[in-house]
Image 1 (cartoon, rainbow, N blue to C red):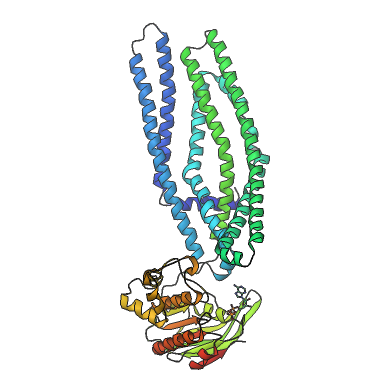
Image 2: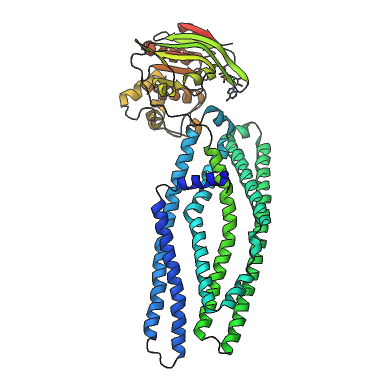
Length: 541
Ligand SMILES: Nc1ncnc2c1ncn2[C@@H]1O[C@H](COP(=O)(O)OP(=O)(O)OP(=O)(O)O)[C@@H](O)[C@H]1O
């Protein structure tokens, strides 16, 4: 076994943690059901044989046993089915949580490389594929194999020749390398194309108004339809191949049944077997054929599972931000940036930047577009790591090298629309769930969001996806109010006046600068009026 397969097995084993006893119980219950079904065959053979004798004294007892085995098997199957569904559900949700957690904490370069549509496709369909294999199909495979072997051994004990005949006609071609390779390639291609489709779909839905407004509908529709056509072609190929192999399988299996039947009839006529044995034959043949058919279906499931497993593991292997305990700095005084250098891949964005921002002395950061202002914000929030140089936070006594743990000290307002769907109140409370009405009112006032009170539902007005229902400027101000709900000593504002008229912008920045007299405020801006009101202006070129 190669190291990749071993790694995959270990990984699969790790996701069963917390569910292993439920999986074992399910396996044992199904095993008991198999034993009962074989007892059913044995006792029904006896019942038929007794019925053919003149002295049928214990027939009643045997019939009771036949009925009991059937009934118990039914009850056990009912319970095990329920248990398996429940375990699948719980495991699926847990795995999804883990996948989402990894994505939420992934490093900047990982975020850039993965499209959220692709991630969603993996979290949804690949996760289902993997979990249903681990919690259900994998165990079913083992049980089917056991059922098959037990029925085969039973048949062998009654008539070895017949058992041999059945084995000889089993379509073993299904286990060939050609079959596996082709199915694997198809499965990979389908998954890849599905991810592409999710990417296109997500962007089409997100920008549907803009797409219509800019008359891009036909182009985007064509892209989406092309992607669907590709999926259709690949899935049709998959379907044709699977249907052909299933048909070949059924064909050979039915010939097997026919041969058994003819063989049985001749031997019955020759008086070599009893009626009971004949009925047992026919039942056992069924109990061998059905598992073989199930196994053939299982192989395509297994191939899909391997593909999905690789895709999930690839997603989960992205680098994550290590956990650092939150560290609130009491009595914060100064932020130092010393000879800071940063580059994305090869492009140097910030080169030897040195600045100092003190509490109560707001700073404006100005620079033409694409010069690295937002990058600087990301560095301050420890979302990016400097290539060279240092960022420190200092209180009265000492300096602390900035880490992700210091994020609790920052209230940050990003560029653009970042509201969540839900009411305005929910959007504000997410930043500080314990806040009271006073705090809400203050944050709304500080961000010049008094317009909220004139909305029909006031602060409980529901905002759609990406702030739909509010203007850009209104959404921007609610985003400022949200940041102001947090009790933080450093306020970072990234172009907060870009969607506001001059008067509102002046009002807003006036309130923020006044209220931030005991805060460390940094405004990234193109607004020179705002820069004039700050204590220092830093140019990034
Ligand atoms: N994730 C990224 N990977 C690679 N390069 C990036 C990434 N994000 C930004 N850049 C590049 O870094 C440079 C600075 O980008 P940044 O967003 O910091 O500029 P900015 O000064 O905030 O611009 P604007 O005023 O337009 O918002 C740009 O040239 C941009 O192409």
